[in-house]
Amino acid sequence: MAAAARFFIRGAPFKLPVSGVGTGAQSSFEATLLKLSPNSNSRTKTQRRHAAHFTFQPDPVPTQYGPTQKMNLFQSVTSALDNTLASDPTAVIFGEDVAFGGVFRCTVGLRDKYGKDRVFNTPLCEQGIVGFGIGAAVAGATAIAEIQFADYIYPAFDQIVNEAAKYRYRSGNLFDCGNLTIRAPWGCVGHGSLYHSQSPEAFFAHCPGIKVVIPRSPVQAKGLLLACIADQNPCIFFEPKILYRAAVEQVPVEPYTIPLSQAEILQEGSDVTLVAWGTQIHVMREVANMAQEKLGVSCELIDLQTILPWDTETVCKSVVKTGRLLISHEAPITGGFAAEISSTVQEECFLNLEAPIKDDQLLNPRQGPSSGSPGLHHLSFSSSFIQSVERGQEKTLC
Image (cartoon, rainbow, N blue to C red; front, side, top):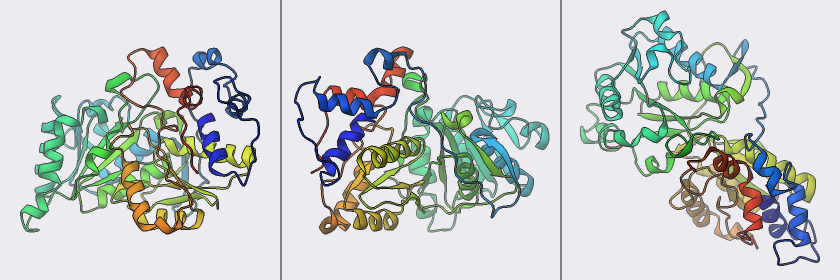
């Protein structure tokens, strides 16, 4: 967050005049920045922190969908799947270990309730899981496939990109597999190392014919997952696994949907637009609060929610108003989806921009593959903002 502070200070000189800025690593300016970040009095203290890099902030309790119940994110996913199996006799759920509840317990109890023909295990073969899902969807079933971790979705890449996404197009709309939804735990968790921490959404954002969705909370997870299942296009639903138990909200018990491809403005602002999705939304909430409290900078925070196709209108309208844009995601910068957003905004809002668009380099929890060492992984996960400032990697907004 210290890096975020520098971003706002450099980007909004009209808000906070700064004097006596040094160039060394121990300058008083950097000391001030470090003070702006909680729990960052020293590198030693940061290394001892074995905690998440954010605090989950629940949304207001929804009232438009009927009675609610306290659920964490994995329970809200279970509720959505339960609603689907109960209302759609063609719905089937399959994947590695889903019959006993899955490694994150998202399907717990569903096999006992609906039978082994509707909730069943598959071999450890992601290509086969998705291929089976395509065939089931083409045959008329509502197919819900689980990839145990998003990091292992790559063996199924050919089936998703060359088969599922193009099935309707290559058949001239005679056939489609729009009833296919692929779920996968996604993102950093703090101890997942390189094979359980990846955020591969940008790989699929280049492929027309599929939709890619990432929720930020239990309420959003249930509504967006049900929207994906009901949508007539194959969808990939990435679930932030660090939120499975950390995120708790009052979630409607009855089924409901949240529209796809509609971003949500979570906080109105006038000085800079912040765009993120999934777990990073909660990081950016803290950045926005810090910017307002310490620097007097008003931030407009947008949850993109759907990566493909994304809501260009909401983002561009916000940038026209604020004149500045900062995008943050967990995935590596090069080829990340922030580049697509940046390119579009640069083209659509060029005359409204007051400064260059800022990518996610300093606000990104992970610049490359996660460390194999749990200690180092916690360090990179929770203190990248502080280290960015110490290394002097900041970029000037204007």
